[in-house]
Image 1 (cartoon, rainbow, N blue to C red):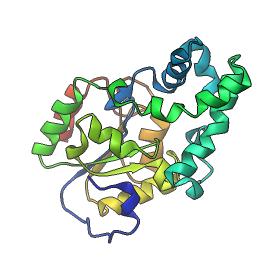
Image 2: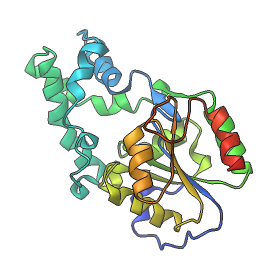
Image 3: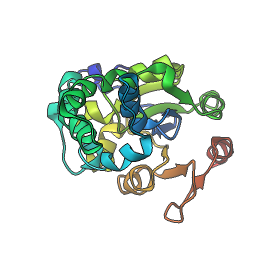
Length: 244
């Protein structure tokens, strides 16, 4: 797996006849228990203050970089800069949930460690079998995800790192899906393969926008009539890719 912090300085020599799959990560291959609401709620719970995940979830609708994909953010490519940018957003979320300012400030400092708690990450049961079968069939895998700077460390800690030739997190890339530039970056890093797919759980980010960039997309984990191809389970996706 290539460390995204190094990829900007690597020569673009990855051209290969091997087909490539660009994978979304969270919600597609694995999930952080409770996602972001869970990470924020866990911090408060450890401090003896209870706010339910359901109460926090609506407060996360703005502020995160992927909520504003039209705006590039190359200035946040450094992990410390990314998390510093998020700190006042976490404070705002806590305050709107009724948390007093001193606790909101202190709790916000702990969200990073909470979200990155590797023991709270769960790999979907069909993920490893699917990646294994496709790797054995000659497919190359690249992660392309709207995510935190530490995505490579998460992927490695949960046992998936060896499957991926590259890990591209939007935090490092400076663009969020569905911004067209992030798909161009992914194709560039992959060496512009003749055959490739984008696979993920979001219609716009993982199907429609990639197709506009020349990458056919497949929706997984749910069905949606807006997606021309979709599979609820990766077990059903694998035969399709192997025979398409």
